Image (cartoon, rainbow, N blue to C red; front, side, top):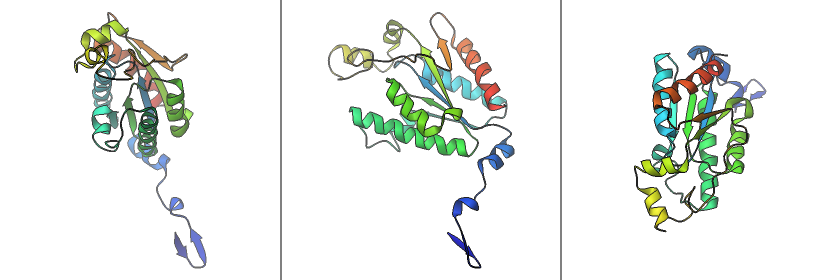
Amino acid sequence: MSGKGNHIFPVSDRLLQRSDKESLLNQKGLVVWMTGLSGSGKSTIAIGLEKRLHQDGILVKVLDGDNVRTGINNNLGFSESDRKENIRRIAEVSKLFVDCGIVCINCFVSPTKEIRQQAKDIIGGTDFYEVFINTPLEICEQRDVKGLYKKARAGEIADFTGISSPFEPPVIADIEIQTKGKPVEKSVEELYQFIIKKIKS
């Protein structure tokens, strides 16, 4: 707190506001929350979307398991409580980005409706766009770049989403991207056309 005469002003009253930063960037801060099975293409589509938005002069940050699990969440495992805490922290960090007028693209399996609702409640419904990357399990298993499905089928990974742990698809996502039989570029363009209107609204 800071005093001026006999008056005390909270720090929040002296900081630049979100509207100041959005005005500077000429964009609206928001979160694109991509949910889907491991191997569904979330990160690949996110990278394509980031590049597409960057070309438009939009400031973007992509968050996924690689840059979150090795940093802010490197002390968390994969128990139910740790998964909830993982999403809670991601949502809180995302909210900070949004408050700076930045577009935050998040790529997380986030398998249950409860856990996605938790993220939405933290970030705020008006800034949260749920994107369902709908890729059939068999295609995800065919990709299996990291060999995770193979290990899960062999019982080497417990509680693996889609195999030994359920995935609850969104009932009504803000947008659903069906990737089967579709080139990545088309999925990226479909999501771009949806989200650019929100950023510039």
